[in-house]
Image (cartoon, rainbow, N blue to C red; front, top):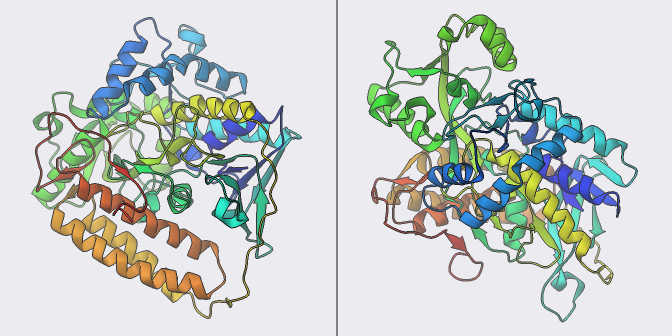
Length: 523
């Protein structure tokens, strides 16, 4: 059972399907995954001027001292094979006859060399479309769209006197409006991140932290949730609040400017526009607050119309449809939540704390991203650890089946109004944006935690008395993730990577990941 139909979930499914039947759940349409929104590309250590050591070093520098070196090396060593596997699945990467594997490689912020394989500026969609076609055609893969997981079924549900393990999950069939108990020898959480806990995000509506929240409720450890990556350049436009302007546009020479045309990155970092995302996002936030701006400008006009149309056709077309000709005028941009660097603690085979439960992709904390994710490492992590996750599942002995208790709706009724859900959703996302944003203070975090506790009481009461819906389940998961983010941030008494505190502006000489354990004062 795989929860999530993005790159991580589909990679696991395709590696399993020749050996065992697989069910993949997508809570909206199958095409609605964060993978499809990824513009930049996937890291491949392929060029003659590149090396495993160089990629590991860049990953560590971006991760601000919290990257697990063994994890970074493990994944970097398998990056070429990962790109090769995607080529074999029919992904139409941009070609270059002179390039390694016949691929054109681009460069993004934080990378020392060109090592990003891409499909123009819509790499995620190209990858997702190709793998989804493969999954649809495989007789052993059952794709269920408009199905949403509620909670994991563990030993306590089946009343077995044994160390806790996972036996399956409860899932809502949104079309039939019924909850089903589904048994599985292994459950893989590949639900993506929790970007929708914030008001402004580049993430799709599916990114509500479902896998993180379900694993936490089942007793798994959660790590590094304070490190929420803000992408520096989200399009600032009233009709497009979540369109990302790819990192590669700065990698190819785009300039960040103030309204008067002045470039400002030189006063923040010697790498200027090629600095890692956390540095660029804080620089933009600083300049916006200093000058009272709603946004800054990303100027690529000097790159030329022909170059922009060839290399950035998606950005060019989308902006042009909104009246912005990027070949002749700068793009208004603003930081927005982009990636959840923390998540469910999982090893290099995707194994979480609960036997039978796995976590891969943005849902998981593998140690790769540390305090800040290096651009284009996310798709790579999905492919590499998706494969090792499948290998581990296939190596496990079959699970002894257990009768699963049916979902009990005898004590609830249909909700008479949705205003509580919509109001609490809006309040939660706004308070997270205002109090737990790019720059934080202890007072703001404490205020956020207090309000989250009040919201939780209302949400839990609603959940206990009314039949479940997707909106209610997503809100329940978001409030769990919001609390995990705030509690993690309160525990970090320094500024590091994506977490910047005015009360603790210095970076400690040494630090460790923030790991939350249920029942130890961290809820």
